[in-house]
Every structure is written in structure tokens, then in C-alpha cells.
Length: 123
Image (cartoon, rainbow, N blue to C red; front, side):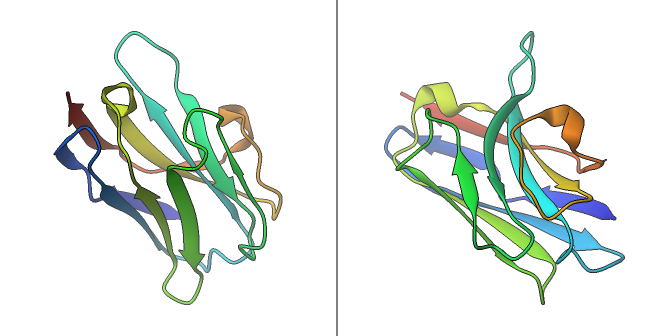
């Protein structure tokens, strides 16, 4: 599975951005998908994960209520809607796929990673 994240950009605090993660190759319906983010000098951190069917999702406390994950398995795409953005959301955002239906919050559980997309939130 190859993953390509897109949709990053610059926005002012309080604004919104929508990220997409498009998969190529095999279907992703058997993969849990996750979004992670990383700032220079820090470890990659969990943002949100969604089950293979899309019926379960888990959010980091820092984004709960502001971010929404969804997926369209027919289009092999996962989405991340980010609202009420804060400067501390500034990071490179990565999507990842796990060869399991069960989503987790650990980077080591994910088997495939896309190149990141930069999100910059100014105050």
C-alpha cells in the first residue's frame, strides 16, 4: 500500500483545513488507518485512528472535539477535517495504514506510511 497525504497549508488560528490520504494498490478496507503528526525535535505523536470499516475512531485528547476522521473505502481515501485550529497544531501530518482492522495509537503498530503534509497555524 502506498499512501499520499495532501491538503496541508497555512491558516490562522481558529481556521480549518481538510487533509486527505489517498491509497494506491490494494483496497484499504482491511486496514485500520491513522493520522500522526510531528514537529522538529519531537517524537511523532498520535492524532486519530479509524477502524477498517470506519465504525470506530479514537482521538488524542488534544484534538478531540475539533478534528474529525472519516474514510471512503471505495475511493481508498481517508480524510481528516481539522477545525478550530491552534498554533500548537502546527506540524507535519502523516497518514499510516495498519494490517489490522483495529486502530491503535502507537506508531510502531503501523506498517505503511505516507509522506507528510505540512500544516502551519499562525496566531
